[in-house]
Image (cartoon, rainbow, N blue to C red):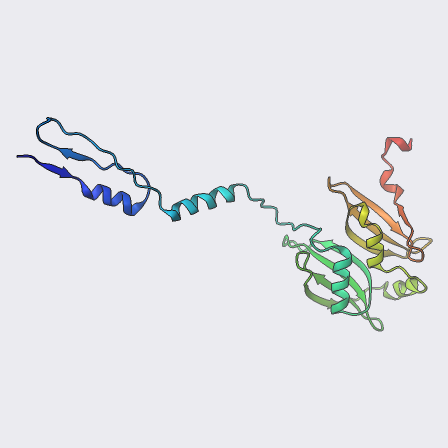
Length: 216
């Protein structure tokens, strides 16, 4: 009597669970000993997607700092002034709140002695909030701005070709008032600049070149 015994349960498990399994079919009869046949079950579509997702995650950059170029300094200033009308006296990419979150911090002089710090999202340009500030130099800044024609945003645009502008600030403490700006090159090198608030003339801060051997 010919007997065909197939372990169907193994094959079914392979098809249900995904992965690769071996189904053993034992055949008795004329030819003597049992023979083994292999049935390979394919990975399910979901498992393939999971494997691809794991591969994608392996190369992901975990650096929490966003790109500084997504919203430029002039764009951040424009967003801040739309939310809080006035005169921008500084803008800086700030990550000093110990949360790892980087935002544009734009200081705006509004009516009277009012001064506000406006936070702008560096990805979308959306204003995240604003709060009133009390600073001793508010009146001094107002006095320094009298008669000037170059705004903080215009100063940032003037040096945009030098690198990514990461900060712009009105310096009224020196012999002459100027906009001070910092740029970061694609290689990470930083450079400070001065922009004349009357003429828009750009000059490099030579103090940054003090270690340059060509200066000797």
